[in-house]
Length: 305
Ligand code: XMP
Image (cartoon, rainbow, N blue to C red):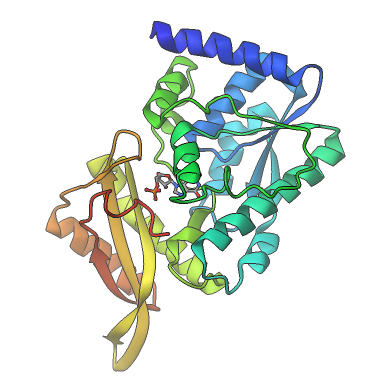
């Protein structure tokens, strides 16, 4: 606890020192990392902080409404940019390119907002594992390796760069953030685009959004997983009614982990897996199959791309 209090005091001092008298834009996604950053920065620089949430069209179901409600008191600005992101990603199948496209779009949106408000700096919730995995060439997490080289911001401030996820959660609790935020499952910056293996289209994003909502609904309360998700991993043959269907295969993943660097699959009761299957295949017409992924990390990563 002493360590956490010391971190908070130091982070506030660092944000004050690094930002000087400038206005700072923060990319608030509603995840624990950016929420902790926003709270620290709000304590450090008050209304020189400009919190922005971007609706990329790649978020979980109902997310934009939920985040607007929770962070309304910070003066959160919601930027509706779904068309911009989905147009840029349309047909893209390379995972690294998806990350770069999303990273670049984010920066462009923030630059526009910064120009409109006179902010020169950007604050980001990058944490330690994002940095190591990007530097190690495993994946370029959108907020690290995905950054375009030419950024109009004069400085990027990253107060959580040295922390692991569980340490960020401790800081969230010490800052009295709502439990819902402190214990939130991680969600990748490139959002649902990396939960469609292969081509991103508006249709595939809608399908994977619905599937993720059902999976979370069945698993989160009961199993309290570190993370659970669904991904479209290809197509397979099925029959629905009297028709043959070459439909989506949804892979369900639920893992426990300390920091996301390694992870173990959770033993889910067969009845719960059957509930997920029947809800997904009955409510999403284009899904033909549902499977459960039992691979730990390593060798698999948590996300599919
Ligand atoms: P992986 O898939 O690398 O994921 O085992 C480890 C944790 O990081 C999240 N993740 C990301 N987060 N940008 C992010 O902000 C990304 O590009 C990204 N890729 C994966 C993933 O959801 C998991 O919690």
